[in-house]
Amino acid sequence: MRILLSVLVLVLAVGPLLAQKKVSDDMLVDQVRVRLADDAEVGGQQIDVDAHQGVVTLKGKVRSDKQKSKAEKLAKKVKGVGSVINQLVISPD
View 1 (cartoon, rainbow, N blue to C red):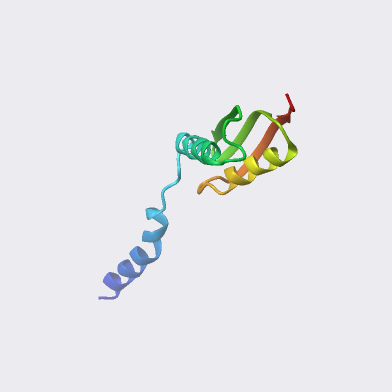
View 2 (view 1 turned 120 degrees about the horizontal axis):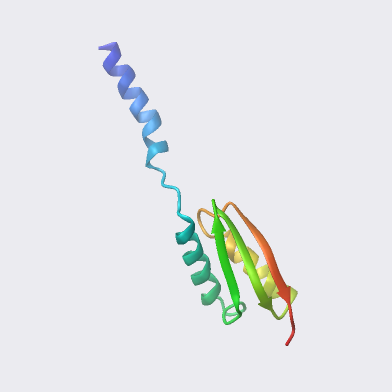
């Protein structure tokens, strides 16, 4: 009976950890692209998105520092993103 109880406790303790799925890099890229495209301030800018092990990299040109910061904030809000490397360049033209 003790063995059964121990196994049950172990399953209940470890089960939720196993149930957590790690978001794939491809899914992160897709979700970040959608979030950027849907934003009125950032949408329409040419921003390349890449991800590797939860680290998202943003590259491309934006028109202002405000757009650069907003793009980074939007990317960070995506579930599964661990950090963002913001390599966006400000180019007013």
